Amino acid sequence: MKSYRDQLFAYIREKYHAAPEYLWRRYPGYAVFWHSDNQKWFALVMDVPGSRLGLDTEDIVDIVNVKIADPLLVDALVQQEGYFRGYHISKGNWVSVSLYGAVGFDEICKWLEESYLATASAKTKQALRPAKEWLIPANPKYYDVEAAFSREEEIKWKQGRGIKTGDTVFIYVAAPVSAILYKCEVTKADIPTQYDDGAVHMKRLMRIRLLKRYLPEQFTFDVLGEAYGIHAVRGPRSVPESLSEALNWPM
Image 1 (cartoon, rainbow, N blue to C red):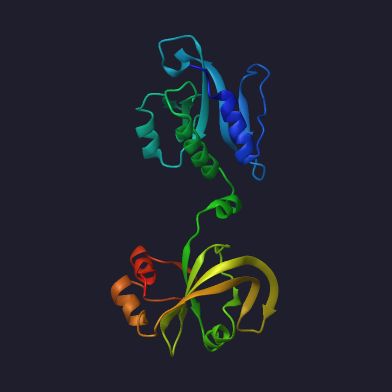
Image 2 (cartoon, rainbow, N blue to C red):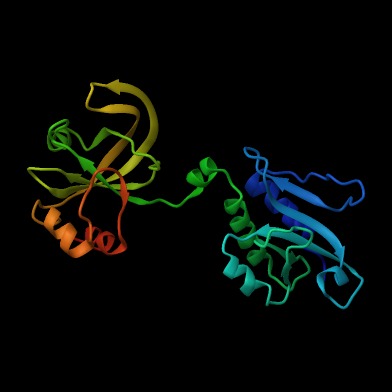
């Protein structure tokens, strides 16, 4: 069967905008693919004798080395046909995958994506992660969010660490309301600003668009604690799955 090597190179070039680099004169068929920002490898394509992989052949075999974040998954994969412990890579999270058809091309691309994320910089991981839901506080003492949303459906808001465009934020309004009142979409993040009045400090803003309102008695502080284990909302935090289901339930 023909190797997926050329097809894989074309896929990496199109999706990750990375070109192969050949670093070893002794091994002209070894091709490395790097992240442009942190210079870490995310794939290494090699052509090696099958016997080096434990196969009963001296024929040359094309493989791609990819990094898998979960070591237990590595242990499971290397029990399957077409998967091997990372060849010539000492760290145990690398896996060599045959490019000769024992593993389908779509599956190879899935592990390539896993490797790309596992080796990416924090900035790249943040940019690539799926949309996320956040619970964020609003203090009426400093900003009247209720009045702001009565005037317009999209407003600027202090951006919390980790929040990006496309995320969802649920706004918990502190005392005297003490309840989640709003569901919003982040339409733009990382808007630079400089604000400091002694109590509130802001370096980045985001724009949030109102999607849904909740009654003050629906998701009160007591309900959040008793039903969902949330006993404080002092800064941006992830939304538990059970609370997410309730918040997104059609009204």
